[in-house]
Amino acid sequence: MIKGLALTPPVLGRISIGRVVEKNGKRLPEKDDQFTITTQVQGHDGWILHPYDEAIRKDSQQAKLRAIPVQMLFNDPDLNLRAEYSLFDRKTGRPLCVGNGETCRRFTDNSIQTHPCPSPDICELAKGGACKPYGRLNVSIHGTDDLGSFIFRTTGYNSIRCLSARLHYYRAVSGNLLACMPLELRLRSKSTTQSHRAPIYYVDLTLREGMTMEASITAAIELHQRRQTAGYDQNSLDQAARLGFQNGEFEDSAEDSVGIVEEFFTPAGTDAAVDGEPFGVSVGKTTGKPNLIEKLEKKAALLTPA
Image (tube, rainbow, N blue to C red):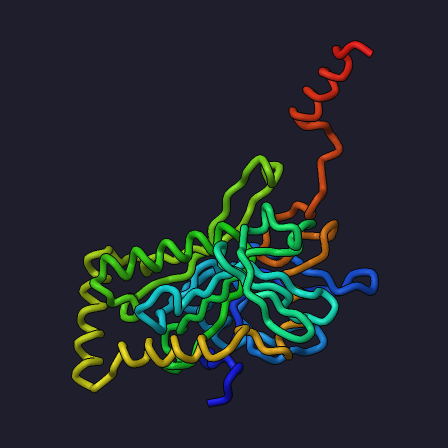
C-alpha cells in the first residue's frame, strides 16, 4: 500500500445539484433545483449524463429529478459522509488547511503541521470566506455494483448537517444495519432572512417513498441475513475503508482538486458555489438597503453630540 495515498470508494459517477457554465469568458458555478447524475467524463457542454439519470427519471416519472434511491456502503456514518473545514488554494487546487473544529492539518511547502482549529468564524487564515465545510457522500444507487459508488460533494451547512444526522439516526434505529437500509436522497428547500427569502436547496436522506420505518428495518434485517449466509463481511469492509481513508493526508486527488475548487470554492464576491449557501445570493452581496443594525448605528450617530 502506497503511504500518503488515500484509498477511497471506487467512483462510478457524480451526483450534483448544479454545474459549471461559461459566462463572459469565465467558468462559473450555477445552481439547479434538481439532481443530475453524471459519469466522470466531461464533454464540450459539461459532464456527460450517466444512463441512471434517464432511467430513474423514467421509473419515478419525475420531470425534475428530486429523489434518488440509494444504499449506503458502510455501517459507520462517518465512512459514508466525510466532512471537514477545508481551505483550498483557488489557483492550484492544492489544499492549504483541513480541520475538524478541534485540530487542523496545515500544508506548507516543506511539511504538514498540526494546529488548533477554531472554526472558520474566528480563524485568521479563514477570513473572507475562504474556508468552508466540505462534505463528500458516497452512495450506491439501487442496482449498481455493490462496491462501486456515486459521489455527492457539498459545501452547504444544511446538507452536511442533515445528512450526518440522518445517517447516525438510521444506524441507531436499525441496530447498526445502516448499509442494509433502503434509503433515498431527496432534494429539499427552505428560505431564510440571509437568503432574502430566496430558496436554499439542500440534500436530505430519507426512507424510500411509500415505506414505513418498520418496513425499512425489516428489509434491512432480511438483506443482512442474506449477506451473512453468502459470507458478506460488513465489519471487515468498514475496517478496510477506515484504514484506506487514514492512509492519505487528503482525500481528493490532485487531478480532481482544481475542478472541485472551481465548482465549490468560488472567490468572495462571486456567485455562491454549487450547493453552497445561500441559494441565489452572492457571497458578500447585499440588497442595497441598510439592515436594522446599520439603521440603529446611523441613528445613534445622529443623536451623539459632536
